[in-house]
Image (cartoon, rainbow, N blue to C red):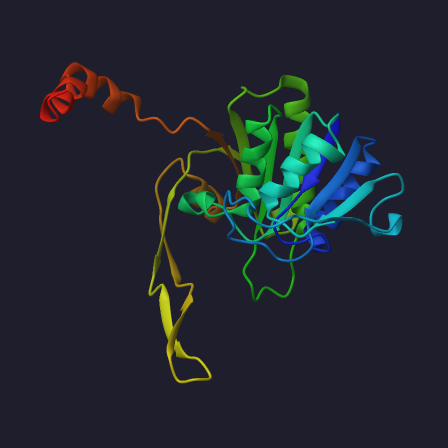
Amino acid sequence: MKILLTNDDGVISTGIQILSRSLADREWLMAVVAPDRERSGMGHAITSGVPVRVHPLDPGMFSPGVTAYSCDGTPTDCVTLGLDLLFPDADFVVSGINQGPNMGDDVTYSGTVCAAMEGVILGRPAVAVSLCCKPNDSFRHNTTATLAALAVLEYVERTGLPNDTLLNVNVPNEFMKNIKGFKLTRRGHRRYVDKFTTIKDPHGKDCYWIGGRVEDKREDGTDITAVDDGYVSVSPIAMDMTNYPLLDEMRGKGVDVLLAKSLKL
């Protein structure tokens, strides 16, 4: 299996370094194309209007034989450049290990998950892997997340994935011996309260720090609940966001005809 490895934490992040070494130990062919700095929260953004630059990295940064590049664009840029130009033979995209969770509604903001989405759009199976640690955690169990990722990748190598689907993997920040197992989950609901903190700039004008406090909704079968209960969550994420029941309902009501009549078409 030929893997394109990326992330949104930056090419020097502990997560991508540890995961790349484990992938190389399995003798999977691999190239790394990752942002040159922290690019979390970029979602599915692409760079337009300005050039994107790619820099080959010293071979010593990753395992022997691993070709690696840093990119000053978004995580999505990294995947597009990787698959179209730098490593077109890649048949799989892995994004991670992210240093923080990507569950619930956060998947739409996540550069980690959206990098995997870009892989799916470009016709490759993809997996996003996140370690559910907090910013102030003194110890981060990236080895646990790596072992979970390898198990998922070996499964996907054997079975494949549907053309329009990625797997979103979230791993509790625990020693492997404390992990209860894997759970197949759906995307849960995550909300942020007190999103904006008002601060003053050096000129005394108001500006806003966006963040907030997480308030998760515990529901059976969701990624949020599974991780909270000590399980690795594996969620199939489909690219087609069409609401088919509503589409059928609107067709049954002839909404398209009603709209045309309102404009006398």
